[in-house]
Length: 272
Image 1 (cartoon, helix red, strand yellow):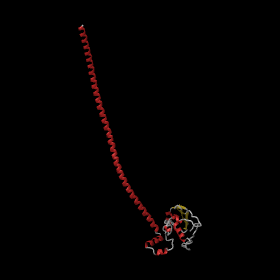
Image 2 (cartoon, helix red, strand yellow):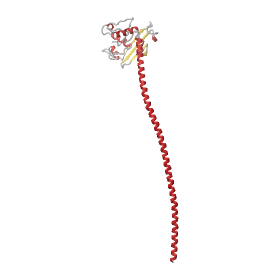
Image 3 (cartoon, one colour):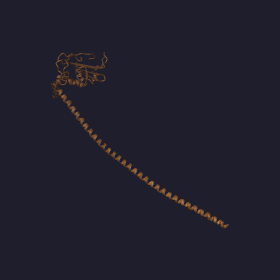
Image 4 (cartoon, rainbow, N blue to C red):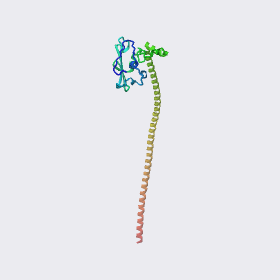
């Protein structure tokens, strides 16, 4: 409904938006809820957050983004905490066609949670009692006790502490889950460590056995070498003895040949 920059003033503590059907009343309310951190497109009568961007008409082209800025008068120091000293508090939210949301608090980029946190317990918020839509009065009258209690707690400022308690409980739960995972991880690491310890012992035994094997092989090789060396010496001794015997036999053969030759000579002389 609002493709051009539009300023809506709320001159008093209570303001009503009225007008004919289709003039943009609901869009103004949706804009306030959206800039205060509404995260459900369905609660803004859309399918996705990009539905808040002007999608074009017969006379206007679509635009690439939507931006809302809400400025609060804090001259009476209604807010407490780090922003209590500011006379004005401005919050702005911007969304682009690719679905990227940006939040700004007094011109400084921030998180969505920073905006929702600053208004906790003040009655201001995307779904608080400060925004009364059509049919909400009858909804309050017909509300279930639990729903009515939520409105009363928000008005009394209790919701802030309930939100803090819920966040603390969630942190405790996440811490417990992390501790449980760490316990499982520690047990798994202990099992792996035990396996590695056994493998290390087996490897150490293997090294010891291999060292013993090398020593035994060295001893066996030395024994074999000494045995072969002894055999060689024995055979060399036998060969030496046989050489001496051979020389003696050769000498005897020579003596025998000489004797035969002398006998032949003597026989020849006798024959003559």
